[in-house]
Length: 596
Image (cartoon, rainbow, N blue to C red; front, side):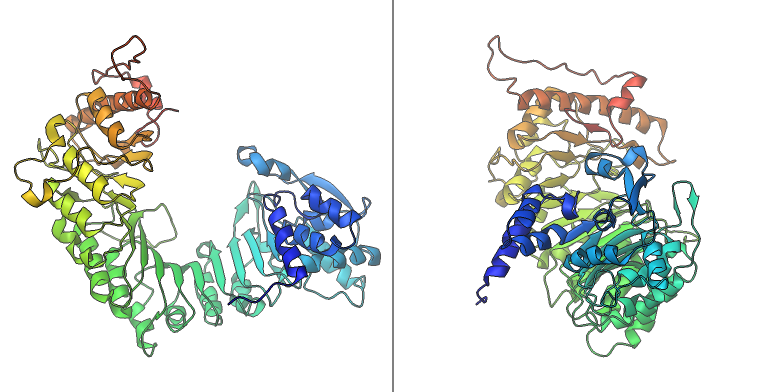
């Protein structure tokens, strides 16, 4: 049982809830209700101040508490393109105009011990000149005898996502050995300013600054030569990590993480120079014994299959991020087989293999696909994981599923919530062949997986008679309701290179089972390759026009149109499959059809 809260803890929880949503303007400029309580009610003063200062954004709230002769507002140089909503509050930042005096420190020490979380607003300088001024005050002897660094002695969470290398020497002003959660990103340039500094020493010593760290997100260090080795040394000093999100690591760091009993979540970049086999040789017993979630950025899926096999990984969640076109069906199958073979301690619940534009990976000399076809046999090793809720794969290869095999897949994974299978690239059926998956398979999928909210596949939408099972569907698979109960969670549908003819009929069939469907992504031009012939590109343009009309009809149906035959019936224009060149801008970057 949980212990009973005392009155002070109850007040703290109440006031923290009252302050939800006021982190854009923090400190004394935050929640006016709490500010009034802090000023007028002696009983509530301290808990109200604690809530006001629990989370501050940048150092502005601290500076603005001082006398008006001590600071001024200067432009924060935030690009106009990112100034929106709360960001507009940060057009100007507070900076000190004179050295800090003893009276200033009396004000500062009144508030800074209350801070538990310190964050940086997007694209906003964290502390323009403030840290340097604090250091200068200390050097000049203006620190009061009972005011010791760090500035925030009780801070637990620090989010400084755009650290300027020139500010790194000031870090000891902010750090606290109590910090458990950090998010740090070192940047090279901001706007037009060229920044100087070397973050290697800082990254090497970060474990000393934050010895009790439990959660860390450290990024952008790959841009600085030698920082991978220095950060890896720091990782080897953390003993209590539960979650680490970083970039490339050395074999020593991997070995240390593999031996941590506390680690449950890991995100990192895996390359051919990582030395996974070396790391494994340095770990006694089961590596990553309690790791449940792993996300990897890599340029060859073979590396992850090797990682799973050598470490005998048994995670519940796996996400793999690959450069475009660096996948093939054989490598995807190897990953699936490795996860199935070693997934004995836990049941896999999530598998995502998707594209990334991350440019911190070393370039491969060549990439040679070994096979280019995914079939139901590719996925059967996963059938042991009955609680799989996410199967989201985009690989540059063909997919061959029929009504029967798609239903078999749905029966194997009744908890599916995110099912997306090559719906960006398309299933790449050869020649004039059409994907055999019909509306009946779609209906069966929606019936068997009622939790679906994300869906991407390829469909033969030309076959309007496909709402009934075809002759080759086994008897056991012919008894699903047509149509199934409506799925109201799906608002976006990805259909690869699905073909359609009758836009209104297709819209009615889709709306009947997905009444909240707002947009459809089809025939994405970014998925085309130099090998595509002019005929394929012409079909792409023709089908895009038809699917745009499907979207227009869906909009009408959602507004109550196409019902009855009275004068109130609403019509949508039918498409002849042709559209002018200047209509391309209406399609959107992903060829989305929506009601925007």
